[in-house]
Amino acid sequence: MTISPLRKFVAALLLMLGSFGFATPALADVQVSFHSFNGSVLWGRYPHTFIVLDGTLANGTRVNENYGFSARNSAEAITQGPAQHMILTETANSIAQTNRHFTVTVNDQTYRRLRAEVIAWRDYPGRYYDLDERNCIHFVSRMAQLVGLRSDVPSEYVRRPKAWLNYITRRNPQLGAAEIA
Image 1 (cartoon, one colour):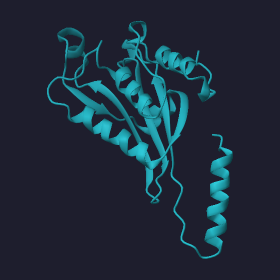
Image 2 (tube, helix red, strand yellow):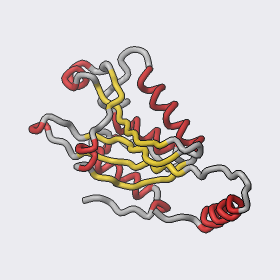
Image 3 (cartoon, one colour):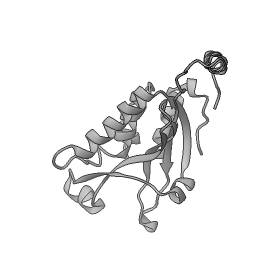
């Protein structure tokens, strides 16, 4: 992670003010990482994409969360169209086996917007998961938009999470990220 010169200056200024006894606000530092899971029908998990939020809010609250969007029942999603949905979280062991494509640092306000969006997808009434219209890629695309990235879901990527995140990497060269083979 690189720290901008402005952020370094503000941190130094706050440190200096704190040393003179002035109360200073904490700097928020939450990283949003975008992951893909290769998956395999033979191993019982389909390809998937999700986000990981890790860091500290300005009030000192520690953040260590991850969110993806999925159907409650894969067979229902494949055979019957729109299906019951859920927000899926991964274990630390599962995350360690995924592809981390890129990471973006966000402030508290953006973190709260991301969490509100997760809740909106989780609480949407009825059958909201659709393999071609509202799957994990569409969910992560929305998260990417909320952190300021150029993000869309062309039809050729709608069921290919790793290829889609590589596409998003190409669309956002400011990330300085490399595509994952």
